[in-house]
Image (cartoon, rainbow, N blue to C red; front, side):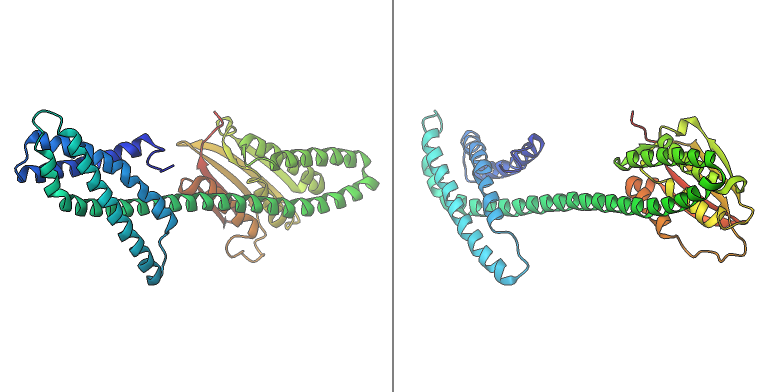
Length: 354
């Protein structure tokens, strides 16, 4: 089916485009001494016939896609000219038949000889109109290709984001499991009760992680619960060295964000912050709503003697890319060190399931 016929709006705009052509035909006929009745009765139905007849250019354009070589354009040009001559002649032939039918209407008896005289002009005009229809159909094909390319690009971007998420899970889980199992092995000998507690917490974390991993978007509440389960295990590992401060605005909890977006931030805070300091420190997670945006922060101390990292690590870059991939320029990601504290801040629109 022609794309113009698939949409009422497009079809209406296409038919409106023939109104100036009908007015032009009427003006030409009047300049040749035709009466208003004869000019209108011939021009209007003739333009309607052309509008429907020249839709067939769509199939020619589909069969002869535009190429990038001069040879291809030459071959196509010959086909366009032959089709235009045929369709122009067919249109003028329909005008000849229409004049005979309209001659039965009182006052239009002189229409056939007038049309016979104008047949060469009508044929030339039909050729030009058909070539214009060919150009219009190539524009429609180009628009469809652009929309299709945009859709495929969006699909590829989505697949890339899903691949990044899978890679992120593959990167986080083994590293976390390795540390947890080492701590669990050590605890079984010195503190069996805490070892059992850690087994329960580890099981809960893995269950939550697998559940969230199947979804593209989750509520911030669920991300915070996963981070709390993760940090509860790490708190057994680090003991008093890890202190947690949670400051969460309840109005921010329903906000939707890409899954496992907070997890790399808290893991980065443990790995490069708390674990590197003999005395440990405070890991602070803050979530608030301001002007319709959620501001999510993860702050942790750093070793002042350690070299300052240049740029973002792989995990942080993935967080930034996935955040901007979901919200575009409506979101912002910042990470840096100030006064011995590493600050990671995510700002994104407050969107909920409702």
